[in-house]
Image (cartoon, rainbow, N blue to C red):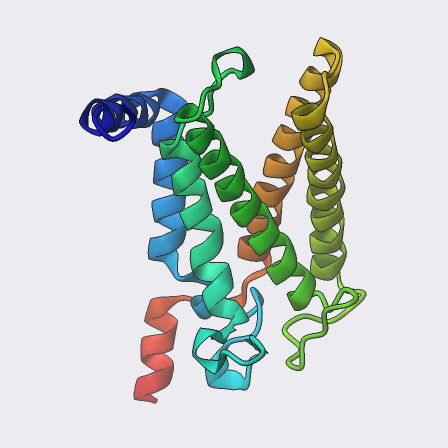
Length: 221
């Protein structure tokens, strides 16, 4: 029966996905994700983190060297791809869960996990927060930029950590409606802190104050 209904299920899910994209918040999330992808900021802003061209660090996968990648690549692709999937794959109310719709819920949660954890781990590596350590110094500890990025990282990490714990408990049990509201606020706070962290990186980037005309004159001289 499930195989016979596959074409219908496909078009139903496609309708869900298109509806989520057309919605205002879905469009905003898609635009944000594509702007991050097109910016290549981990490679173009020298204070964002280490890059392979300057001896940057790599994520080593034991027994699978082909899966190893630089931290800059992980920062460039994983968070925006997770954001695109979160915007495209809708979540479903608990009362209407079934075997098919549970797939949407799992993909939605895994995408959000990919977005937040990739950002948090990449930023922790750039800041050399334990247990991460970056071999290339991209910003000085104790500087204003470091302090602001450190604060925004914690403002994103702890709310998302608490949000994850609440969601795990909610999956196996039943939460009070107020706790669900709190979990939503925590997730929003983590997202805003992540945006604030990106703003700090952009604001303190040396490239922000570069003058193309001045660079051209310096090259000619």
